[in-house]
Image 1 (tube, rainbow, N blue to C red):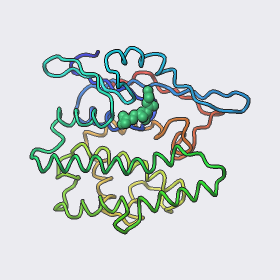
Image 2 (image 1 turned 90 degrees about the horizontal axis):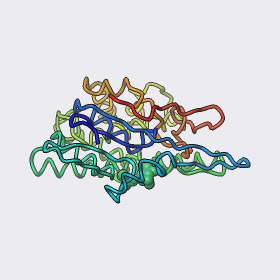
Image 3 (image 1 turned 90 degrees about the vertical axis):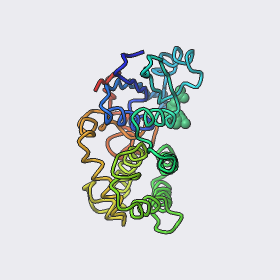
Image 4 (image 1 turned 180 degrees about the vertical axis):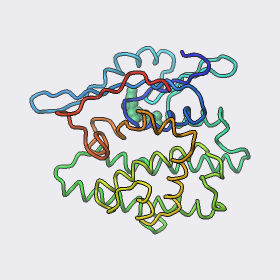
Length: 281
Ligand SMILES: N[C@@H](CCC(=O)N[C@@H](CS)C(=O)NCC(=O)O)C(=O)O
């Protein structure tokens, strides 16, 4: 367990579900110890499989004795009374951090708005994550599936996912962030997922533009575009954006999309994972 002023987040050497927890700790001004486990590709007779023993055969064994739900991400933290907490489940980690740093709203109404927004951003993430981890028999099938993701997320009718946030931001007294003008936990999740979708839009040529700060407007979501820029400009986030953590791949090496450089797939032949096991910020 680490010292009282630092919070440890354990996750794979990717952004995935660990990225938002890391961001919140950095934003809150706490010392972050990011422990990064590496999934290793194994080639056997031209078949590729992935070995997670860097996690499963090492820290997982000891941590499981303390919390039988242990998973990645996990968080180790000392509370103000000096009690040790080992927490798994990304939403539980985020809710804990939100309560600790007062980033889940103040009134019951605000708290419930944060809950809804957090779970809505999770739904948005699930669409692109399940696509990213699907392997297709050919490029046509991949493009067809990408179009389905685009429709589910960006369609302008009531079924579309992005329009929910666009309307939420418009009807929320034009506040900068989802809850109000202060950053709350679902903002981190929304930013992180939008960042991933922007890479998707570029990779599958749903937009001509290459500047990330223009892409959401280009597909008809100006409020989300503004949210994206405002969040990125937060002075307390610059430490994260300037760190190696922001340059980690979106997905793990077994994914078809976002596991390599930008939207590309991890290239076993030319890429090596040099992420340090511990990154302290
Ligand atoms: N619902 C869980 C999902 C956790 C999960 O599926 N973790 C994946 C990575 S995203 C994993 O590889 N876990 C390691 C393990 O199963 O030990 C959460 O939100 O934390």
